[in-house]
Image (cartoon, rainbow, N blue to C red; front, side, top):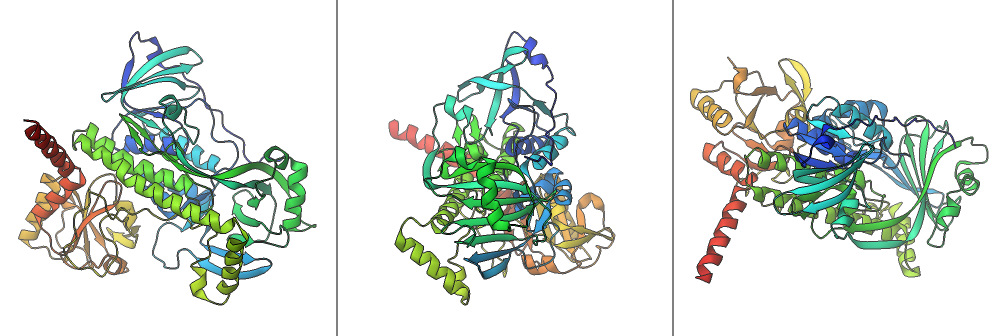
Length: 572
């Protein structure tokens, strides 16, 4: 097999913690230096929180594994300072084609509108993604990344967590306020705590093969149902960097995984797909079974499960790694707020509330895709095939075709952190949704709205270029007394503007006005993870204060206290 990538070997560095006679305490310990664990550590560092990352390996993933990274993941990576490397190296795409047998059924565009900094999707091998994240951790003193360090024991309580770490120099113990388990679908932490990830195993097997070849195929997602080169099964083709192409081939439940991974078995299958004249080299291959699982709760005492350790989906739809990164982002600002005593402990419960919603959404879409791709009986296959035939001529049938609903930003419409909507908007960017980007100008230079959202609470306000004294005082109070950053959106630069008040962004394309229904006085409050927590047509200090407190979980804390007082009174 040919290798286009050489795995870096990271040095094991002896930790001084091993010399301590007592367990050394850290605010946060992260188990697993994959995409989730590394993203958690970087995000915590941006909030000023120190973490120890423990990984029993000393390199990035072997094989390309996850390759499709969605726009929302790229926006999160933009906030973490990693997106440029990813986009520069990755293969950008937004078009896809669906085939039935040898005919094109229809094609689609995942981001038809313009005015976004980041693309709909890039394809990038997971090992590059992890390498860029490791590089980024080196920019922070707050991240202590320990390779060749395996957690062998764990003791969990409501107050703290203790772990035993095995490394080349022996064993030592650590304690932490919060332990974040990002150690994959076969989570050792989950196993040691006696917890389960429950769900469904689908009776089918798929071959993933990465082949190196120079081909003229466009940079699109191509999916075949029952193609002539692989009859009665399905196939998928994606381009990756370095002239590597991802090919997925459905094998059926009776396929022998070990036999199917042999190059002499794989090569004829791919040759049939690409043609007898095609020249290629096999780089990496794996056989997998569809699984959709999740834990009943992602929180156990002070242990929080993230990514595949918490929830697992089948790969069609690219919802695994993308869902993991959204979970990491959801968790970090809440832990940081609690550790920095800016929020009550009850805020952390909303990680489970919101990300259970996200996991269920991903599993639902993944299960539906699996059922459509792999019909379980003759009637299901007849329905699928007739739907594909109709889809060629009728757009209504295309909504029924499911070759994997591709990862979308998760919204939290029922989140207890949202402020209720009282005004009418001609925009669907309500509380619980993530922002839409737009081109802007700042200090006369071209920029993007997404660059100014996140890491803290941000209030975006539509203003006139001539702020009056009352407006100025209100905004100054919100910034200084409520500790909220301000984005003041206007059509022209604000007269006599003082940067200390906030950032004046010019809606140069009028897309902010259009996408947010933003007129003078309209304001949006964004959480540190960029999620909108409330919006209003008129600015009110008291409303903004209440909305921020609600987003920090103080109403949950009040309900908790009230419920406990009621229990006491009932007992008396």
